[in-house]
Length: 264
Image 1 (cartoon, rainbow, N blue to C red):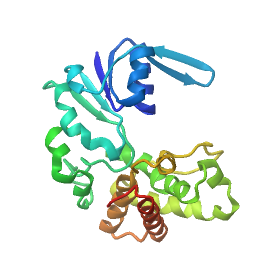
Image 2: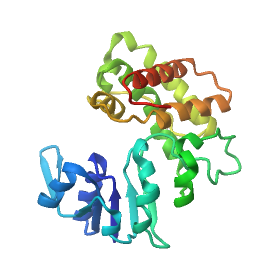
Image 3: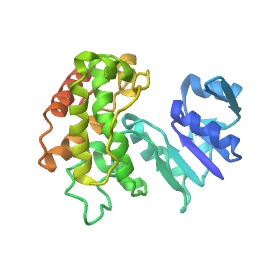
Image 4: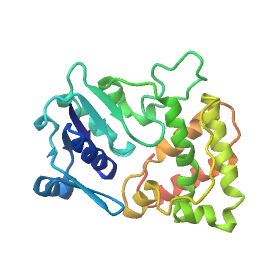
């Protein structure tokens, strides 16, 4: 199977190695030093003490890779607009496209089932409608919400405190804050899908910095719209009171804007 990973950073490179070792014909759209390293040495994946290597085709020009059976976009929401022009050379009439990203996607409001509550205007996630005009969509919204419940609460709290997920969970000053945030996040998800898997936290949290905090510290564009603004819009549309999440959203936007990482 011909599979292209579009935007092969950490997540995309992981996919690429696993799929190549499974016998698929894998190519990657990537750029910069990472591209040059992959051309010279291939991809290496470290999992614990184990290391896996794979040779894949790689280019910063999608046209050089040709039509694919499957395209997996692992771009962050802040870079996904590059698909609007880069995707076409990779497509046949039957090419499947998979979007692996955090947050509310630009296509969420397309083809909603009749029993889904009203959806807010999400045009700000796809300015000009370029992606809407270029790609097919799948109905995987409940899974998106299950992942987003943590992103919109714990990831944003890590951003505001500068702490890892474990440090936030174990901070005595935040002991009463975390469950209240999760309750508000769950209420938004359940307003769309009453049976969405409720997010709970038991046992130790991972001792890592969420990508939102990593992007902030590295001065990269941040996924504020899909992780913060879009869930807040859903809450307003559903008439939900989410004071803690509203405050965190405002602080996160202000913090990113003050560093020049958010223009919305």
